[in-house]
Image (tube, rainbow, N blue to C red; front, side, top):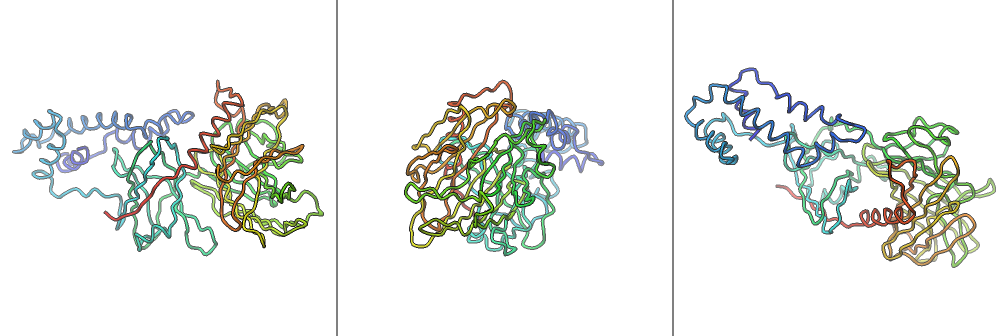
Amino acid sequence: LIDVFKELLQDYEGNFTIDPVEDYFKSKLIHYREDFHLGEKIRKSPEGTRYYQDILRERYWHRLNNTSIVQTVYFNEIKSAYEKGNFKIAVKLIENHLLKKPLRYWFGEFEKRFVVEICNPTDRYLENHPIVLGLSEINKEISDFNPNNYVLVEEHPRIDYRIIPSQTDDLNGDNLPDELVFVYSLKPSSKLKLYCYYSTTGTSSFKFPAKTDATNPQGNIRWESNWCAYRMYNGKMDYFSKRLEGLKLKTLKDPDYHYPADWGMDVLIVGNSSGIGGITIWEDDTPVPVMSTSDKDLIKIENKILSKGPVRSLVQVSFTDVKSKNRQYSVSLIMSAFAEHQFSKQDIIIDAVGVDSIVYSPGMEKLPHDEWHINTDSGMFASWGFMNQEIKDIGLGLMFSPEEFTGYSENNFDRFVKLKIPTRKKCTHYIIGGWRKGFASPTAPTSADWAEEVKELGLQLRTVIKVRFYLE
């Protein structure tokens, strides 16, 4: 209805201008109370959009009533339908009798579009759910899709088209994209349609705000989202907790990040531990650390940044010549941070000759005076403890597939959830760090609260959604 009103006003007003309320909704509302993202939440919510739609509809209708259109043959019939709330009838009358040409409900100048249908079959609300689509799967259905010139939008415009920030990533270095990535909230037991508009040639001009990043200063590889940052050095893993949203890796300097700042700090003192997720392989009860703890270690470590933003940062750390008395291993970790999230996704592949399966652990540092919880049915390990007088309370979390669980162990520095996986097959676990000072007041979680949060996040992340692609 708003679209056809605007189309008519271009003919009947002469010098048509966008209503100030529409301009505010499209370009200025998002900046309202940015510290709480309040304007962004209003724009996203159906209720907030409806509020502005109703105002806009009335304002454009009022403008139409002040033009010569009121003298046309069909205006009284349109007015009667409108005032009775029969908006579909009003639109049909306008389209049939007053528009010079049919409106084309299409986004931009793209040549084609296809549907991305996403189904959440569970009763969980999946907020800002990371969605990773294989381009090979898209190309099976949409053979001419051009990943260099596309944009994702919501099915129905709500005053304006809702563009969904996304990116494509090349994982194997052949200069061809392999995955399309975005985050989107999915309601429980829901099915939704997104449109992917594309042109078969050219390159898209759409640029989205960067909400992830990655750096690799002197082999100290780091990856982050707007709400968290992680790093790996010598196989040990650390994390930076943030009090303020934003990207910090490019400006962090050692030792500055070991001290509290407005944005946050490095809150985990790793020492001799694995930190948060450093890998250990198990041969029965014998640990084989996938770490270089001294100059005498012969483990070779190679770091690589695969992608950085706007919605996912992706890094790879490869370990070779990981030796025990019995065999030699190679380990590949591909680690991701997603926009609007604090966790890191850890994809791991372990290779060794002569074995079909391998037991490994993402080690979790023992925190001073901590309390810890494990739930093998839901695939959760969490601990909450006091780091030191300056940092105070922090939390560590591990989310894993319950069917992979095969035991538990610990030493003086770490706790180990043992996971059994097939050799040479990619498997996934997730890690997350928390900091009491990083939570918005008055939140003061107990260890049980933290464990419940980690458990619920793990269940959400492992939720299997269904996606299909088709032309319409």
